[in-house]
Length: 288
Image 1 (cartoon, rainbow, N blue to C red):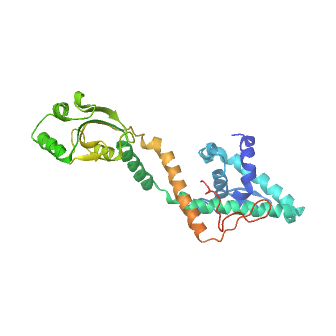
Image 2: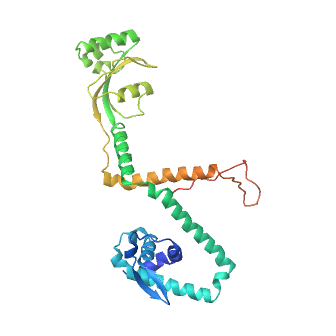
Image 3: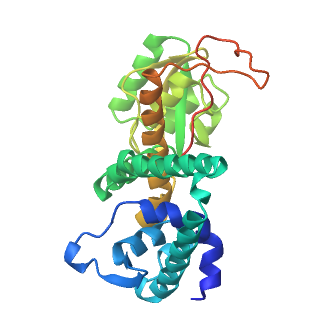
């Protein structure tokens, strides 16, 4: 891979990556890849630098990309050495930029420890199972109902059904709703399309089951039967995993920021230097 393709994306991050701690798990394998003016460039530093590159470069095998990264780090070391010799590291503007870069590097490292490192495969699997369960209960159902005026009438209908009566035939004879002549057929519907008491009772039923207790709404008393359940199809774990991880990162990061802010004394000011309204106005939460 050409050095130029990487340098444009990584040059601004090279010094930050240089300063970060080693990622090498096996110290014995933390080999020296170059020595320049007595300074060693080790594999661990190159591995860290690769993690700072755009995503498409992070998955490239290290064997393919390390020569370009080593050359990039050599150039960085030479530039840094020249800058120090010229005492550019004492300029006020540089010191401000260095503080900002160090804070950004430390922030990324802290967020990795507090957010990314807490998300393991077991947590993603558990969230995936929850998502599948929610999707299966958020699809459409096909249902019939029998609408009557009183609770006693509804109980009598249930007793008749318990004795083996056909639901559609009972609906044709006794339902006062507009769907009565068609056997109480309501067709298919999703959550949010029916009044809450009716929806709650209908979506709690298994396929082929009917309510054993009358359901009251502003329209009267209902006996509901679910004819079919069409679950919303769920994506595969491989398809859903990136989105699940991103969602978990946002949840954990938001909780982390809120916890930090609870213990902080925050005062905000406008561009004119005057305090903003509210004793502890807090800006919008950061997203990860």
